[in-house]
Image (tube, rainbow, N blue to C red; front, side, top):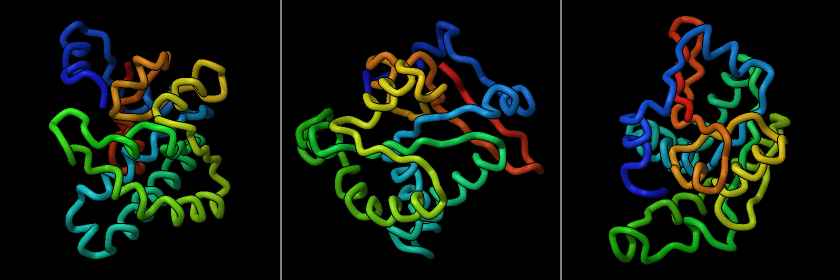
Length: 182
C-alpha cells in the first residue's frame, strides 16, 4: 500500500486537491480512469452488511456494478486493472506487519472471475496486470491510455502515475460528488 503515511504527508504539504460537485464532474467527464480493482474489492469486503446480505463475491459484484453504472452515467469510462500473478498483493506473504498481514490475496481470488464476466457484459475495458495493478495503472496513465488512476495505494505515485484519485465518489444527483486528487 505504499509508504505508510505518504498520503497524509502530501496533504500536510498541500499537494492534494479536494474536488466537489460540478468542479469534479467537469474534470472527469469524458475521461478514462484506470482503477486498481483490489481497492474496490477490499472496500466491498469492508462493508459488513453488504457481505452479510450478498456474501463475499456478491458484495464485490454489487459494488463494482454500482460504481461502473454511476461512473458511466457521469461520462467516465473506468478501465479495471486486475492484480497479476507475477507479484504484487497476490505474492505478498511477509509484507509490513509480518506473515499474513496482507488480507487482500484470498479476497482477490474469489470474485475476480465473476467480476470479469460482469465487466465484459457491461462493455467495461479490463486488463490483467503482469504484477501489481497500481504499476499497470500508472503505466497506462503515462502512456496516455487513461487520464487518471483511482487507487488508495500510494505505490501508484511511486510507479509514476501523473494524477491519482485517492477517493473518487461519483454520487447520484441527490448528493455532491467528491474526490481527492494527487
